[in-house]
Image (cartoon, rainbow, N blue to C red):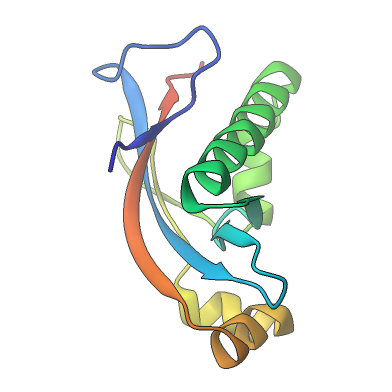
Length: 129
């Protein structure tokens, strides 16, 4: 499976900020495939896993594009529970899943009511000033 990369006019993976996230994949009661990233509180959906992934990529692109253009990328990460790791490479630590489950009742409902697959993935975000 190919790693996600913020794609709006950006293809340089070497000079990107790499963030590691957990993705949760499941199928709802109507048969819709959902790909959810709890650390971003962001999801995509479709008739199959490929459509869900493409939909998620669009949602990710929109979030990153908007927050970078408004200069709010870091504050949005902090609101979502991300912590800055002290380094000159501007690295971030994603909130832990147990922290997110405590804050978001619907996340525990997903794990309790659906068969889920979780996996780690790195996403590339362009370096920002």
